[in-house]
Structure formats: structure tokens, C-alpha cells
Length: 138
Image (cartoon, rainbow, N blue to C red; front, side, top):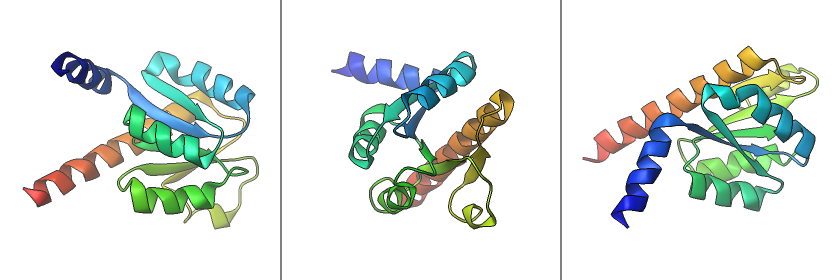
């Protein structure tokens, strides 16, 4: 049991885990190719229930959600069940209304550097919040 916990801790230290909520397998494959060399692992969730499960199992602190998916429900789920997890929206067409909906908004087609920077920054913000919450509890 301790060995499994150690392996999970090692993985968490070396990889940024991200769940991508989208129905498009092609988008997931494209994103995974763009960011895998940067130490970002993408987990595909087709439904909100799958996203919830994958966030729990992977320990991901970033949810990348396609704006066409159930992103507003995802926002509610994160607030209730996964506080401290950052929501990044993937949009095809920019609109000011997206600006307040998430930590960050990235436009499709994805640019490799912008996507890596956005996911890395979202992860760093989520981790910092998690550390502050733990300190406040102790």
C-alpha cells in the first residue's frame, strides 16, 4: 500500500494531470500530442460523470472543458466536489461572456505554447490554493 502511494507521489511530482471534458476524441489526441513532451498528461472524459471520476482517480487539478460540452455543469461540480480545481475553457469562437466563466480561455485550434502555458499556470494556481487551504486547516 505504501509503495502505491509513493508511486502516485512521484507521478504527481513529475507530471501535470489534466482532464479534458469533450466528446471529440480527435481534440484529445491533438492536445495530448501538443503537450505530452511538456510533462502534461491528458485524460479524456466524454461525460461530466467521467470527468468527476477521472479528477478523483488522477488527482488532476485542471479541467479543460470544451465550450460545447457541459462546461457550466462542470463549473458547478468543481465548486461543490473539487474545490481548488481550475477550469480552462476551450472555445472555437471568442466571446467576452467566456471571460468570467473560467480560470482561462483558450481558443481552438490550439497553439502548443499557449496551451502548455495555460495548463501549467492553471495547475500552479490550483496547487498554491491547495497549500494555502492545508495551512489554514493546521
